[in-house]
Figure (tube, rainbow, N blue to C red):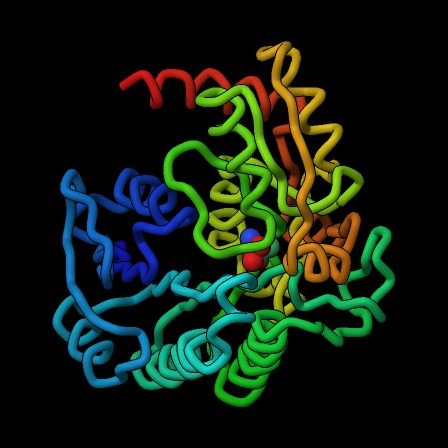
Length: 316
Ligand code: AKB
């Protein structure tokens, strides 16, 4: 008998979740995917829904029991910019929340996906083609929680055999749901502003270079990692996961191919320091060798799809 997976997604209506949930529903059926709503629940969501707080173990365990959950995609997270403003909340959600799911994974034999980030790196990491295994001394609270979380994942795998898998996402670019409270948010905002206003004031400098990825690639990578045979997974902290790197000027030039009069001005704020502490580019050869990761979107293709889809969305 083939066992059907029963999947719980935390952060299901955030930037990643809003695109991952429909993919999981297509694969496993709507009746096998449970979205954990917290504050923002879209009116048009169709599927199983529970509400709860990832910091509440009892609530999470009830949902896991009720739906006989076999896999959790734990995406709920406070991002880097909010993390600097609300460090305690960031610790509670990003570290204590993860620990609850790791403990529940031991007790209920759950396969777990957890979202990490390029924020685990810091100014002492080699920032060009940053290796998988290197110095991790982040200077943001968000980064500190992600390093802690990665080490917890590895510990639970080594000690209790939890099948936990994770990706260090770069800045993610998408047109369905906007990101909230991150440093790389400018790379999405710029598209909205270009189409709506023809101008954008960017909160990081024009030569700020960061690793980025189109959401379709990120979702495909996430599912590839979860599908990979256990024995192929050699990294139980979190895999470097890369696609492209560009600076704001290069992105603006690409957008100008569609909106020739588009102008960008620059007013760097405190998020510049965070961006400067993160890598310019990432070496993700481990992901490529271990489970066949390959990205499909370059800057040109991504910009085309973003502009086309956002024009449609904003007209509606
Ligand atoms: C952020 O900017 O905080 C996130 C990330 C790179 O993890 N997008």
